[in-house]
Length: 433
Ligand code: HSE
Image (cartoon, rainbow, N blue to C red; front, side, top):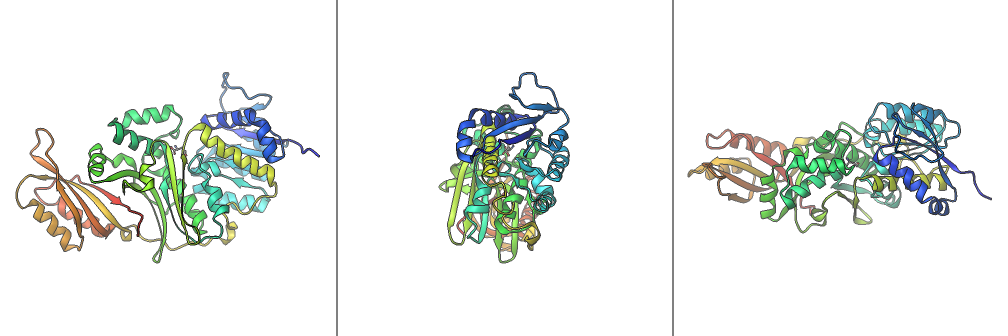
């Protein structure tokens, strides 16, 4: 016996919204075969008129809340973004008994605890595969496929725009602003690309991954955050000359001290798989006690890739209208807050770039300060001076030291008369501890 169509309300008709409508239209036969139910976009919420868009036979509303109120809509797809209208919309959809599919990482990271609890109480699903790492099915993997594991670490490149910018800068010597404009034109960047650049977008995604990995509530204030705007072209070059690539990583790690969560540019040995993940690709490494290490690589942004995840969620809703388990893997009420490792205690190896006068005794002063704080140096290299400069770049790699110890030492070094006060400091992660 054939089932009634699954009526879908799509709110937001930007890059991802249009690509979702396109896949639902173009792949309708395949989606019916896989889900057992035909999928129809019955209502579109678009706050502005777009004469060039084709929504088929769908009803169109300027007030997106009308989609949530529409009794014929079974699933509301929220692709507006942001945490204001989208928040109201999803709450209203849940109140009206609709399942929700969203790509909105900011909303899930900030308000997911509330929204998921509401959805659980209402007996509807809230699915968000597209919210993290675009087309990579990482939510499903953590929530379902690795359910047998105690996960100790989730780490990866989780912002496509940032990876695209760093890759183009390091491999082609292109300027930051030029590459960012291209990322915007390609539909990779957020409406406000500040979130891609300053690490906010990656932090949102890391909060979601950590919750799934460790069974903890979504903890928006937990991650330490540094963006790619702090990476100078010369740091990419110096890192490469020492056998490293610079990637912007999100890392959530469970240690004996508690959980650490951080987002920052990182030097990675060039032989590690993740160091070779370039362009808009994302990569997520998951360490589980039973499975070992799993690495997922794929497109982290872009309309079609993200819509692929949205449509996969819709297929899941059609296949399992009663749901396939809690949205965060564990029921909202059973998630347990962890203790957090203070940022200053998070230890790693370090890359330091200083600018110093080219005179005797400076290197010795620098190394003595590091030794006095028990920071062991792996290598120290004096680079040639920039044209018409009497100062030289000094590049250091250290062994493991906690952040607070490293920053105190660096402040002391920068207070030396012969050293400029604008050093670069980045963590080095070999992922072998
Ligand atoms: N702006 C995001 C990125 C889109 O570049 O990764 C996908 O979340």
